[in-house]
Length: 73
Image 1 (cartoon, rainbow, N blue to C red):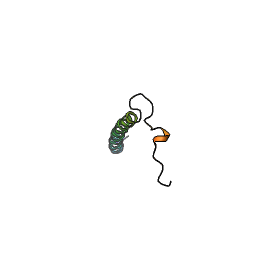
Image 2: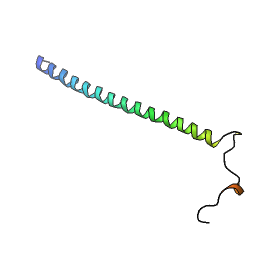
Image 3: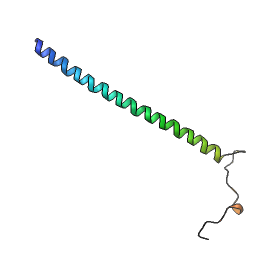
Image 4: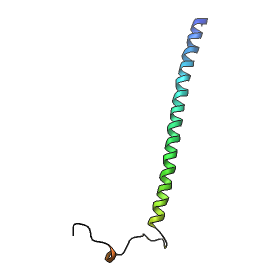
């Protein structure tokens, strides 16, 4: 391999490496965003679950006779 071919190969490898580094950075940012969204959803789920099962552990639903009738009645 002569000097010019070697330089060409190195240049292609450097270009490929630059694109790979950019792709890895983009994937890292996407992963961070998804992790943040997941943590938010987990927190919201815990809050909803706590509201739903307040007190004695049963679902916080009123008995049928205490429920208000739907608006179409």
